[in-house]
Image (tube, rainbow, N blue to C red; front, side, top):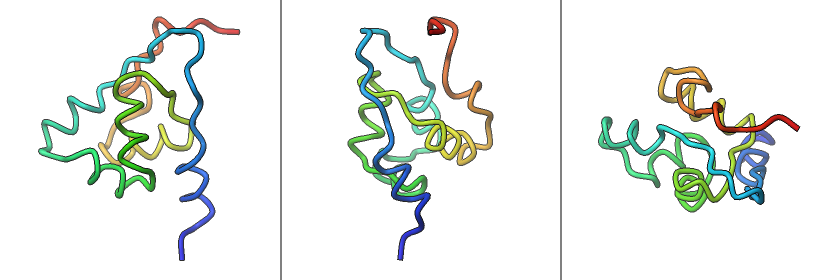
Length: 89
């Protein structure tokens, strides 16, 4: 049986509609560890498609999913996701 956190992370990402791409180091971190998108997705409780979309900037990870990805790599969210070009609302 999956936890509620699993389902929240699986479905809770947002479409990036402003045309901005949130830069991440996920692909680089995966490659360094010889980890596939599918393997990372299973580890953090999401789908391969979500990992792909986050890597190419099509979707922005929820805070919970961003935390799980960063935690998996032993890093902080700020070390995995670059926020310098993101405008505050």
